[in-house]
Image (cartoon, rainbow, N blue to C red; front, side, top):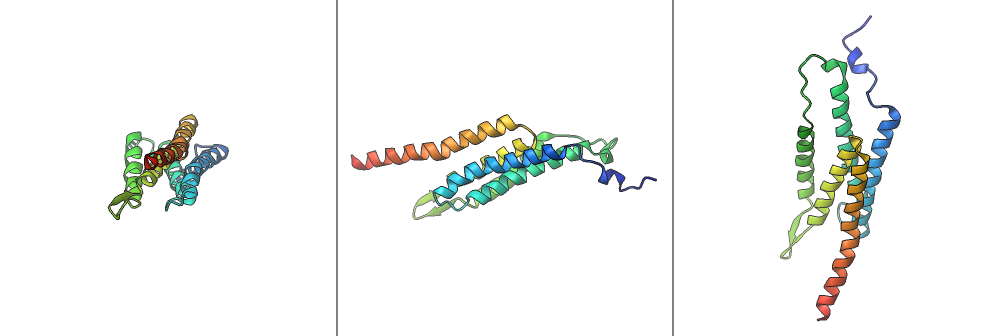
Length: 162
C-alpha cells in the first residue's frame, strides 16, 4: 500500500558518503578562509565562513534532491541552476554588506564581505560536487587574503619610510 507521503520518504539521490564529503569539504574550505579572517581579528571569522559555506552546500544539495524526487515527475519541473546561483548570491550579498561600514572617514569590512561571498561560492561548488573548483577557489581566496595582505603590509611600511 502506497501513501501520498511515500515520495517524500524516498531515498535521497545522493549517497550518505557523498553528502558527508560535500558538507565536509564545504566546511573545510570555508574554515580556511575564515581562519585568515579570524587571525586578523575581523568580525566575520572562522565560524561565520564555515556556516556560510555549509549553508550554500546544503542549498545546492537540496536543489539536486528536489530535481531527483519522484514527487516532481511529470509536473513540468524546470531545473534552472542559474536561479540557485542568483538566490545564493543575493542572500549572501545582503549578509556581506552588513560587514561593510564607514568609520572615521574610511570604508572598512569590504574584504570580509568579499570573503563571505567567496565562502558562499565555494560552498555552492562543494554542494554541487564540483570539488576541484571549490578547492582551487579556496586556495586562490586564501592566497589573496593571507599572502597579499602580507604584501600590502610590507608595501605600506615602505611607503611610510619614504
